[in-house]
Image (cartoon, rainbow, N blue to C red; front, side, top):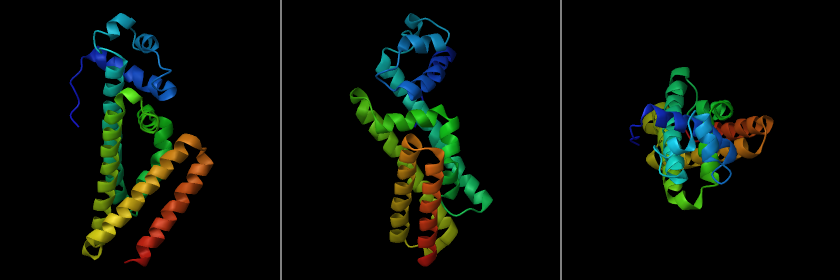
Amino acid sequence: MQLKDLSPSAVRVCDAAVGHFAEYGYDASSLNEIAQLAGMRKASLYAHFANKDALFVEVFERALAQETAFVEHAFEQEADDGLAPGHWLALHLAERYCGSAQLRFVLRTAFLPPASIKPIVTSGFEQYLDGIREGFCQALQARHGRTAGYDRVALYADAYQGIIDSLYVELMYAGPAAYERRAAALLRVLEDSLSLNR
């Protein structure tokens, strides 16, 4: 995804908006408050973004780009650490969720997309999930080489994507203890399944 080049003040608006949108969502967010957080008046915000939809889409695309980079880093890190495919990401999602307004915003938006921009949100989030699936496929093939047939890799990649989706739900609606329990159980089942099918 190619991001637009923005002026420093427009970037400041996006940086202020991501946390605000993550906390309040689309409907309850205030452009006036975002402008104040960015250190400007609301009229100045409109010099950079035509309306709330334009700002929301820009912030969503920027947040998706950052979270995509995090996912790519996760798969690189697990290879460096010698972890089983997909484990590093699942083990660090709760920490990432707490520390990243971008991830909180992406998930809130994906689960509750504004009607006016739903196709943009859906398409962007699907591309993000496809990146997770592709990263897992590559990690699985790197670990198991030719012994992992294409059909089996695709099957496990779909299962892994379901695991991550389930963990996102836990992050949004359950506490850390429930998340940790669910993550450990799902990763164990995945690991056992991979071991049985070697």
